[in-house]
Structure formats: structure tokens, C-alpha cells
Image (cartoon, rainbow, N blue to C red; front, top):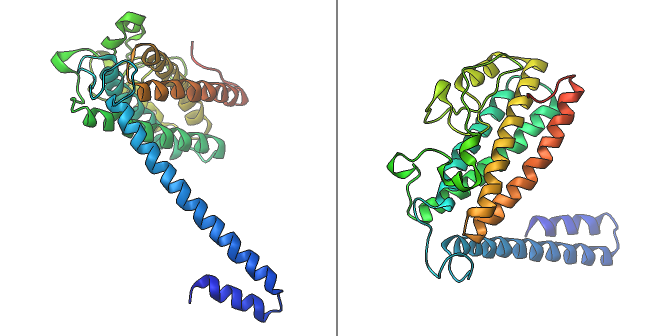
Length: 264
């Protein structure tokens, strides 16, 4: 006897009309069927994403069965954005432990969850394409963006002031001053500073750092939308642009509530 049958018998014992039991059983069956349909839809969507990432039968950008080259924009974006996303996840976990503000913690959770999932997709595609996760031949980060002027976004930072530094370095594979790696990323000293702040000071600094981070991410995603040839990756990049631009507006409002603003 299932838990549902027990519930039905209890309902009957309590005097509920038989037709109500029938309706409950119908509702359960509909929900079970809907759940199975969702699971199948997710399975087929995953298969379609894999096929599109391989270029199988897409008819766009690549021939059937072909994969991007290691030096392509597709591979470069996947490698660089995976690193970029990893730092956003790191900063989100830091601020979660430095403040009790529910709005900031909720935003940090959303960013960490979204970007961790997207990072998994990007690294999964590199595995699928059998391409290295490190740029070949010592190629610099964002070199694949050269046609869009992406190299102009790379800046260096040696720390700056608490609310006025220009963070665009990286915490991984640090090249350049203070671990600067690519556009919008925080420097090692900025991450250390975020780890030392509490309460509203941590909230403001996080929102400023993440605003810079999102601006750099949007520029990279827009470049992929123009330069990448794998349809699934282009769609992901366009989704990143839309999502991060929306969060930029939210963070601007959250900074204003704290009588602060994005860094110049």
C-alpha cells in the first residue's frame, strides 16, 4: 500500500466524498506524467546541446562532426570565461560570510549558482572537443578577442583604495601586477581586502567588484556572440549578456541604497 492510498483511506474514513478521492488520484497521475515529461525534455535538451556543441548537423559555422580549433574564439571564450566565472563564484562565497544582509546574500547565491553551472558547461565543451583548458603556446588571455579590440580591456592594478581601485586582475594563473589576468577581474589584494571587511563595507565593496566583473564578462560574451561559430555557445553567450546586464542594474540600485556608486 502506498502513502497515497493511506491518505485516501484516511480521507474516506473522515467522511470525504468518493469523488474527491477520484480527483486526488487524477491529480497525482497528472503530476507524475508532468514530472516524467519534464525529465524527458531535459534529457533531450541536454542531447541537443551536446550535438550543437559538436557542430553535428547544425549547418551553422562548422561542418558536420567538426569541432573548434584550440586557437578559435569558441575555445578561447570557453577557457577564459571559465576562469572569469570561477572568480565570481569565489567572491560570492566570500561576501556571503561577511554580511547578514539578505538581499546581498541572495544576489551572491544567484551569481554563484548561475556562473558555476555555466562554467561547468564551458569546461564540458572543452572536454567534448578534446581541447586543453589552458591556452596553447602561451597565448595570452582574451587574445581571441583581438578582432573586437578585446586586448584594450586588459588593465593592471596594484590594489588601489578600498572604494576607488580599478580591479581587473585575476586570482588565478596570475600574470601582471597583483595577479591581473583579464577584464573586470579583481586583483589578489582586492580579494584579500574583501575577506577583511564586514557588514555594509563588505556589501559595497562586493557590489563594486562584481559590477566591474560583470562589465568585463559582458564584453567577453558579446565578443563570443559575434566571433564564436558553435550555435550553442553563441546562445549561451547571449544569455550571459542579458543576465549580467540585468544584474548590473540591480547592483547599481543596491549601491545607491547604501549611498555608494560603481567605481569610475
